[in-house]
Length: 152
Image (cartoon, rainbow, N blue to C red):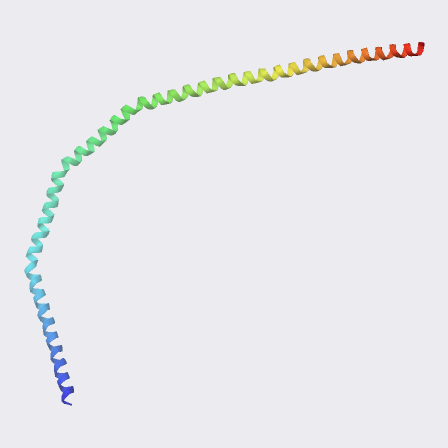
């Protein structure tokens, strides 16, 4: 029994000590918080003032940057306008040239097709006439040979 009493006293004392330490820590924390409050207020005020000063100091630079960006954009527009116009002119010239040559090529192909048709037609007529002439000559030759064979 003495052993269990010993442990109860030991752990009971430890529990009380822990509670006392927690209370002291809480009290110390509250004191530190109260002591730091003026410093936190000063830091907050300093931060607000510094941000205000930075805004004031940077305002002219921001305005200059904005003006510079606007001017640069306008200059780019002015410089690029003739280049874009020139490019458009070149595109239109190329388009006209291609159209012109396409028309010429179409005309040349059409003439070639017509010429081939005409030549084919003339050749067909010539072949037909020659064939008829040869057929007539062959018929005459056959008739003559028949007559000679019969007369003999």
